[in-house]
Length: 423
Image (cartoon, rainbow, N blue to C red; front, side, top):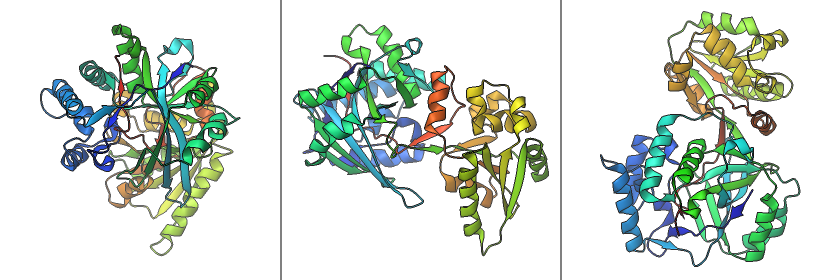
């Protein structure tokens, strides 16, 4: 894969406080949170990535040009690569430091197999992002790419030199994740990064819509700069790359007995009853059993409205033969749940599932439990943590995982760097 440093446009830190101007990717910003970001600072990046009003794209361009004129946004002295460490603590108390770097990569069609998608995309977001790209002629956010280097060359040969320096950016986001950024401008170090990724295949972990937007824009733009897209790259061999599941919440009113009868056809069911005194302990045991069992056999958790119990669902061996999917997909817990239970037994159409009509895809574990405790859902299916190997296998075979299968955490902040698509 061809990698280049970025002719970067960045916030002028003598003018703004970085914690007030960065934002998550556009697709995870709710309307309420968007309002808060607008109020936070008149130069918050949300005014570019999610501009309000009828003339969204032209207004975004107006803001962008004004900020450059006012030197709120400035250019780096020369092309650079941004090395980033993201620090956070999981709900289970594990301290994580995910490392990666932001640079540009050559845009490739999926047919070349140099860049692999793993999820499906929808037309609406791509059209929206394309109009914004045309207006501003820049990448405002990164694609999240994963590569594999078991020798950890960049981590061993490049990173230590910069981690010993004062960070260029050190900002904590509203979720408590610390983003520490260092500038790599040494040509020798940039060459190491380029050589390390030269023969690598990239997997799109997050940002499928943004990548396909960049692909479409590259085909309509004549500028050589538009043939590259800004991405964040992290090594799949690093234990700090954690993928969270996306849980399935049934919001239709469905009888508990119907759901239990449905899952019993295809899964061996173990009931874990609890009372108010031991609920937290049983819940912890429930989550541990899902993860441990899923290492050997497809396992999913179930929490039902009105039931003082959690259920462990272990897929019966014979149920695999009922799943109409390639072998690479059959081993995924979400495919089994989607095909056998959600579609076949609970009668959700593909359109309802895509539109999240009567079903929600929730990333936060506590929200999946709260939906039942607050009587906002009939059932919460608690998914196991996805395995990186499964994602790679599915993508390498030319398939894609179900919608909203994975959640690579933490998200990448918009506002760290902007990549102009012209000289």
